[in-house]
Image 1 (cartoon, rainbow, N blue to C red):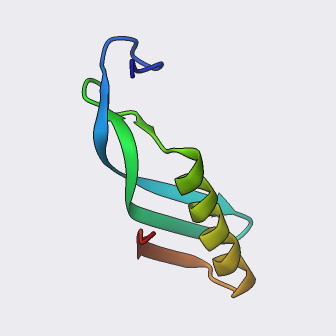
Image 2: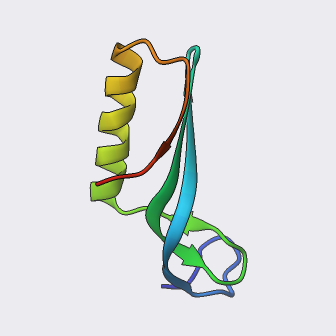
Length: 74
């Protein structure tokens, strides 16, 4: 797909790091599968992966996590 940010590059399968912040919690997911622009590096995460990341973030928030760095695992 064509990148909507730089409008020049095309995306390829790759990995990205997502940082989520809510209230007093900071949660970092490394190695998240994404389509990554080969020109500017913008990452696009699909709906299923996004749902999984948000579900894991919600679980972390309920357990009282304040700061956590995790390797993404489906």
